[in-house]
Amino acid sequence: MAAFEAITGSRPWPARYTFSPAVRVGNLLVISGTTATDDSGEVVAPGDIVEQTRVILSKFQRLLEAAGGGMEHIVETTEYITTTEHYRRTAEVRREFFSAPYPAATGVIVAGLLREGAVIEISAVAVLPS
Image (cartoon, rainbow, N blue to C red):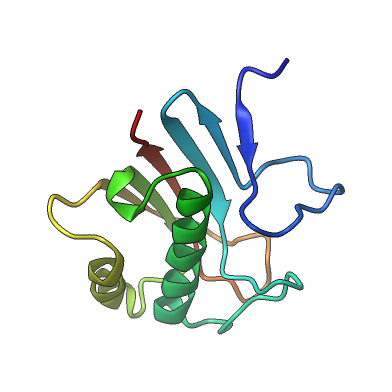
């Protein structure tokens, strides 16, 4: 028996992937690094950090709902970005999904991401209701 439960959301998770979108251990939910892709795996809004942030946080919302939580349960995010151009505008998007008190956050500039056209990847940790 696994020490955690995989949370995949509402659609089937491809068997070829060797990771889960999120894992739940007790009331802790760890959300994998996520890029802005559509259902076919194509990057949405290539190069647009603002729209990609919105897509990623929408994905988080669906995963949290599948696990019995909501965006208010996220306690930490880590953002990996390839460009600082328009990065400050991602704060506007965060305000669409989060309210005070805001989760802890870390931003890291990286040389690149696995998916071409992706300029931001976000991971998160949530504490779900008991």
